[in-house]
Amino acid sequence: MDALSGAGPRRARCSLGAASPGARAAAAPWARFSAWLECVCVVTFDLELGQALELVYPSDFRLTDKEKSSICYLSFPDSHSGCLGDTQFSFRIRQCSGQKSPWRAEDRHYNSGAPTPLQREPAHYFGYVYFRQVKDSSMKRGYFQKSLVLVSRLPFVRLFQALLSLIAPEYFDKSAPCLEAVCSEIDEWPAPVPGQTLNLPVMGVVLQVHIPSRVDKPEYGPPKPCSHENLLPAPVILTSVHELDLFRCFQPVLTHVQTLWELMLLGEPLVVLAPSPATSSEMVLALISCLQPLKFCCDYRPYFTIHDSEFKEFTTRTQAPPNVVLGVTNPFFIKTLQHWPHILRVGEPKMAGDLPKQVKLKKPSRLKTLDAKPGLYTAYSAHLHRDKALLKRLLKGLQKKKPWDTQTALLRRHLLELTQSFIIPLEHYMASLMPLQKNITPWKTPPQIRPFRQDDFLRSLEHAGPQLTCILKGDWLGLYRRFFKSPHFDGWYRQRHKEMAQKLEALHLEAICEAQNIETWMKDKSEVEVVDLVLKLREKLVQAQGHQLPVKEATLQRAQLYIETVIGSLPKDLQAVLCPP
Image (cartoon, rainbow, N blue to C red; front, side, top):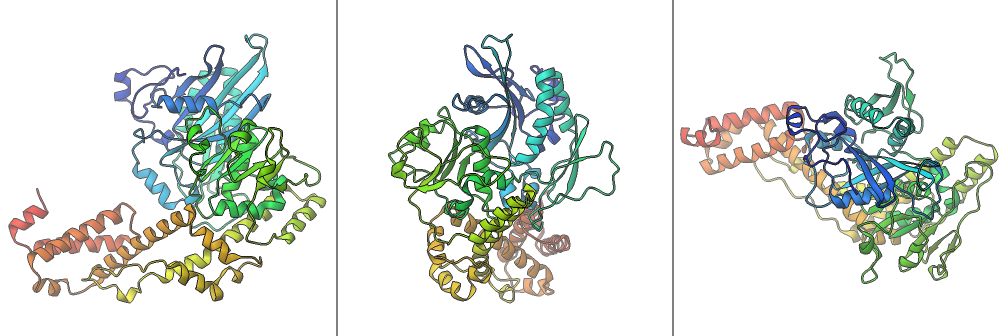
């Protein structure tokens, strides 16, 4: 199953063959490459082995046997897809336990500024695939079949698809030397920094991308070019590193977009059965993007096969289906996953003309045959009424032949406003649980964040609910009650509580640093209490310096000065303990 995959813990600058230990020790690590990609894989079809890993680059990047097997099987469309020519799609696999790469300071720095849905994945790999299958009489099977795969922890599907479009055709013609040159170019790229617009040169082309930041306001146009550089050749501007063409993806399900949005919000198990990995992966990624800016906290697999290591885990009937969105192409899954509550079967998306025939809502009991017609097979009843005005505007846009990106912007804005209308009341209520700043005093433990009481929140909706920002009618209370039982409420609450706790610690640190009477406070305190203050201040300082507390640099400097002042007041033996030479 494997070919050129070494056993080094990370990667070093080396050729495509096996790197010598001496060369690996002397060379600098692929730090800049690692900021974007974990590795590049080439998967080919072997008559005896089936899919086989022909190449891993850098050659000493470590993959487990299970990860290699998953990458091999997921890099080829299954036999039911019949993909001829060039096809692009993506997958997502669980990283094997015990093999996690060390979490670097740059990763934490990127995640602290990136929107939650675009943060670097700590426990999963994304695979971005460019697959080619063409007739070739020189091959034993009569076909050339090969995939080039970019493995990354970043969910930048648009950027990596664009990169593959440049690299893969050239690689299939010229093979390894081209790939080595491209990887060296990527190793010269600046690291992704949220909020920055970057120029990324590769193969004579400059890709210009904006790395989204959590403080960005939603925009639907292309990023502004860098004004301080005159680039030749002119850069290819990507309007987004991650956003898909939602209108094209959702064409057959536009009448059910809100139902699907609710299913995603509630973290319901859903199977997407599509005719190809490209359609499957795009639909799954489009569905999970519906919740932005809320993070999708459940598992999802844009493309999944019966060979996947989690196949038994996801298909067992001995327990309830897991909270996963699965994209599949093999009709066998209709039978295997018949006990799942929601199955969406779609055809290939159409690129022009009138709105394609919309899939119908059907009862799950009607999903009995492998050739079942397209439809959303579910017994779920939506809590909110359908937005008929949105559908009319989209249809009118089609009739007037409006650009597809305009239609996508309209659909994306609708979903964003729907999610924000749902989340804003939760945010307001959560903010009310934060202790008042006047109650945070320097020399006392800061007060606790009050508990989230669901009944109190639901009562607050009468005067501060989603009706203030959303015209949609329906059973909002019922939707919130179901949301409280979902993984997304748990994920949202944990993240917000963590941020509020850090803010509380930061305010307490500021209160201590702004206090003018530390010497007066120390006069009637025992050495144990003074040492305790030093240790707590140091702990807060370490957190703040690691970007875990939102404090200003001036506050950090005052805190360091306070620590030195307090230690200086202690006996020499204690000073030696607290400040060892």
